[in-house]
Image (tube, rainbow, N blue to C red; front, side, top):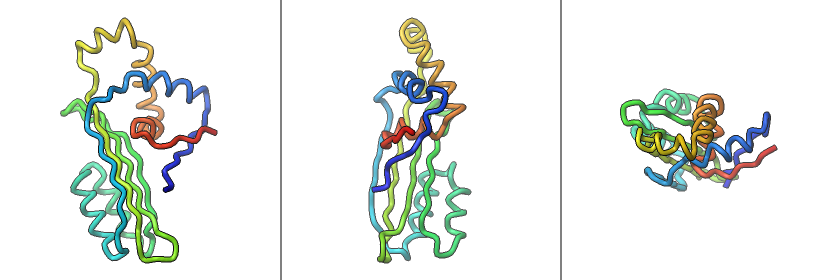
Length: 156
């Protein structure tokens, strides 16, 4: 279903990602939606996603401005300072060959940033992983979002 995400393994990135992912907890919200719509409902879906993901409003608005182009994809990682959460979002919409049907994918996950108590405990056990994780959040946000969301990764 077009879910494979290709990442180039430059500078030992795969190993760094494996180390960093050790600190990602199983806490937080996770939703995965796959659905199909008629082409004329394209704008309705985009408006719903704009409501659900206000941080992506502008980018999603651009999707509506390209007539007759119904294939779009976005993968983002957002660090929320107020709620102290990390959010990962993958949205994809694409045409079903030879029909007026569009396939939609909406995957969302958030999880809390480590608390101070957890951080103190992790200094002993997971400090290296957390350091690598924080570095990769900055340098490779799309890669980290893909991993956190559980997208199928094809390393090349």
